[in-house]
Image 1 (cartoon, rainbow, N blue to C red):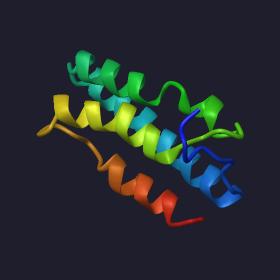
Image 2 (image 1 turned 90 degrees about the vertical axis):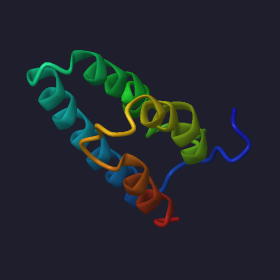
Image 3 (image 1 turned 180 degrees about the horizontal axis):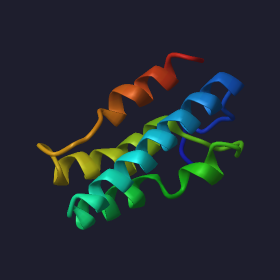
Image 4 (image 1 turned 30 degrees about the horizontal axis):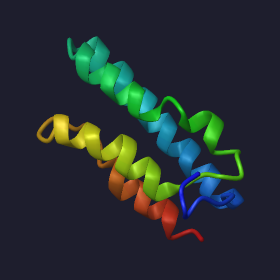
Length: 94
């Protein structure tokens, strides 16, 4: 478990569900426009989120550093959305 892991409040859970919705729309758009590898990488970045939103051990910083930052490093110029900025909105809902 990550040191800052804790349960999320309801507002954070809802905002993360919105974030996941945007990611799924972007995955569909990327896959449909011939960017299958990037769509796969984005799916990989978000695949644990549906389960972990509801757990008592979610770490926003770990999700950002372990999943979003590697995606951003690989795709610095072709990002459909700024997921890190959206995740910062979730953090502010403490």
